[in-house]
Amino acid sequence: MTTRRTHRLRHGDSAIGVGRTRLPLGTFYVAVLALLYLPITVLFVFSFSANSRLSFPIEGFTFDQYAGVLADPSLLGAARNSLVVAAAAATAATVLGTLVAIATMRFRFRGRTALLGLAVLPLIVPFAVMGVAIFLLLVTLGIPKSLLTVALGHTVIALPYATLIVLARISGLDPALEDAAMDLGASYPMALRRVVLPLMRTALIASWLTSFVVSFDEVALAVFLVGGEPTFPVMLYGRLRFGGQLPELIAMAVLLMLITVGLTLLALRLRRSPA
Image (cartoon, rainbow, N blue to C red; front, side, top):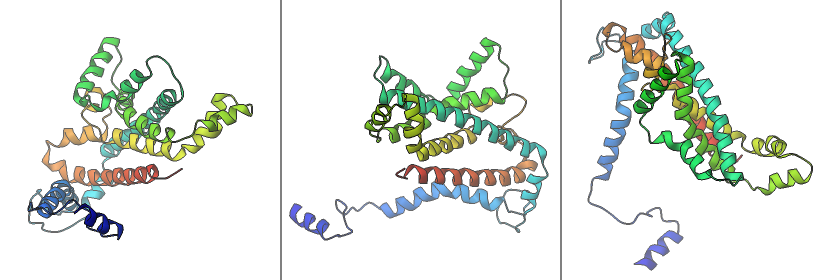
């Protein structure tokens, strides 16, 4: 049987699985796709619905919700806040993640493994727990809540993603490149700036985009840290109680979702790039 299977694989047979099964895997696959994408489809449909309530059947389609978004300064302000916070958090997380990746991959020092473990620890700590912890720290230090505190919190939760993306790229770079640059008279910081960082350009961009998306969509931690200027997810969460405002919120959510998906696909494409 092994010889027969090897013969099939050598001739490019597409049936490379381990065998057949009586389980309805096709049905299971369709169910998983429906569970993942049906809510998004419903959200997209209702963003164009002319119904006075969010219910089926759809009576007609309109762009009034999207026009309402452009006419609502509070929604646009919240979206702007999310963009500012996400850009700041992504920049800080990418810088810190790059430093952690370089330190753990290019230097030997006591606590190197602990440093990497601390950098990725936010991946396993619930955001609500981390939000409470940072909130108590701010209260203890007497620091008022603002967009800056939200950006600091989002930097913490985006740091693991930035670190792992940059770490994967720098682990594939030959350290001899840096040694050669220093043999030619460059200092190590100059070797990093002239040799290493240009080679990691796409990884750094992917790291920034991924961190941006992580911050842009986050609400559980932002609820504890936001001040008088809410981010869009916080505003969306707060306005869900008011049915009359839902159509504009749904339209705004669709627009931001499209931005998020586009940035995510771009980050994935950059991560697969060899440069």
